[in-house]
Image 1 (cartoon, one colour):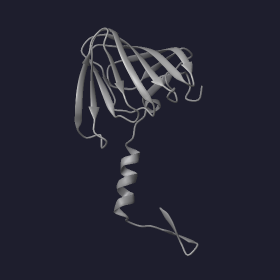
Image 2 (cartoon, one colour; image 1 turned 180 degrees about the vertical axis):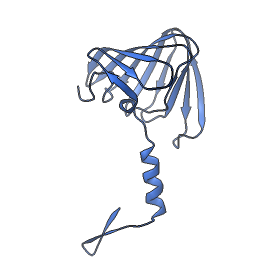
Image 3 (cartoon, helix red, strand yellow; image 1 turned 135 degrees about the horizontal axis):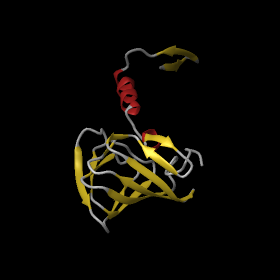
Image 4 (cartoon, rainbow, N blue to C red; image 1 turned 120 degrees about the vertical axis):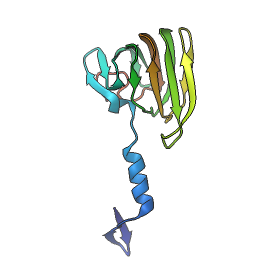
Length: 154
């Protein structure tokens, strides 16, 4: 880390606050970080366990909508979105765990079944578990970079 002093740059060594900040920012995982593979019309998610395929339904700068299939006993990697995310289950069942800002403790748990909707505020760390094969819509407003497009900059 460099610091300017009397218009000269010198390296800061062993600054505990900066070291802690760097440690925290290196752990931040966004949606684009957990996309394992991108194809023309779908994505495959990197999962803690199980399988998830995402299909692009709508993609505009103002909004993005993905249709996701997640296999039974799957678990999403803990992540966040830079935008608001809505999740709507239309077949199956999922549990959403919401974490504190340090990503250490679960502060909320919600179970969604067909017809249920859940809103996640931007920068909310969360993960999902699926007790059965599940189909869900995920909506970000505005579009989250790489969600659910075939490339992060579409």
